[in-house]
Amino acid sequence: MINPASRTKSIELSLIRKMFEVTNPNAINLGIGEPDFNVPKNIKDAMKKSIDNNDTHYTPNKGYIELREEIVKKFKRDNGINTDPENVIVTVGASEALNICTQAFIESGNEVILSNPSFLSYEACINLSGGSIVPVDCKMENEFKLKADEVLEKITPKTKAIILNSPSNPTGAVMEKEDIKAIADLSMDHDFLIISDEIYEKIIYDKKHYSPGKYSDNVITLNGFSKTYAMTGLRIGYLTANETYSEELLKIHQYNIACASTTSQRGAYEALTGPQDEVNEMVKEFKKRRDLIVSRLNEMGYETVNAEGAFYVFPKIEDKDFVMKAAKAGVITVPGVAFGSNGKNHVRMSYANSYENIEKAMNILEERVVNG
Ligand code: PMP
Image (cartoon, rainbow, N blue to C red; front, side):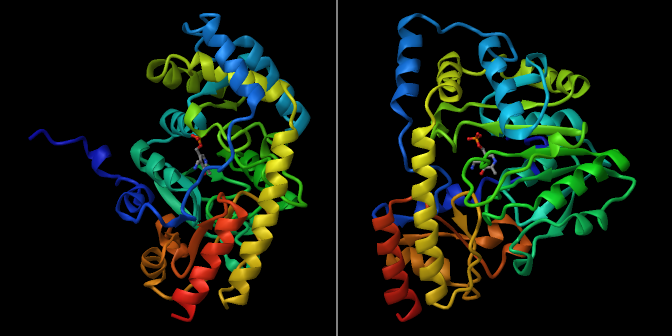
């Protein structure tokens, strides 16, 4: 037996994936992290056409220039970020974008400030890069929003980076503009990098999204097409950073991936340039479901924040056996502790499932778990 490298041993396979392997296939799945919608037709057509045109060769490492030009316009329009196509890299999902950030910038001896709870990949990527995590608790009394004054307390001479994720997986929290701006200022004053994962940017309710990249040059902004355009399986995302940083990121991207899939890049171009009606419809539908799930959980006595974005709620549920009981009764959820120690006493529920299924799932929980 050949031993894996110690970096590989430093991480574990995802708990969420493991759970799906063992649970009943007929259960209602509130564990998933992807939209239940289909890819809009105009995007599918663009991809089919590109294959028929034999547009299936390598693209430039950073991605097609036409796509990067559209991404530049998007950053200006939606985020107030001024960049140019040379400083954009089209990646294999936001996942690759995240991994190249940590590989290019984090090493042993570096501290990375990270919300607790947060998306599972952050911890794994930081561990793989050899850095250490400095957690900041996102408190329920602050609606799980990361606060700049709490970040300030964690800064040391070893602080190399912070990962921001607003709207957040797993809590749905949307950070306040003043905290985003204050953390951006801290990144300049204390010389650290902000890795800003904005993949849920468009899935936001009655609230505006702000990007730290508008306020600081020490920011790598990550985004992707998985959530906004339901393109999870097409594995396509992007990032931007200033010239110095993007060149370092490109080295890792180039030797790992060469370039993102041609077909997916053509779909991404259509996504950015085509009509946005389906995105707006999807967000409206998510909002209805959010309202339903939050009110039902609160009625059952599970304190739940009216999350302002993404498609997750993070109710307080102290019953240690809740996730198992719910799974047996036919509703799959994820234990909050999977996202960090501060997630204990919480459960993540995704409402990327139909309104009817969410209603059914809530009935099951009420009848068989709460009153069972
Ligand atoms: N960031 C967050 C916060 C996510 O929830 C996810 C998907 N679950 C990703 C990144 C990865 O997205 P992609 O499909 O673009 O790799």
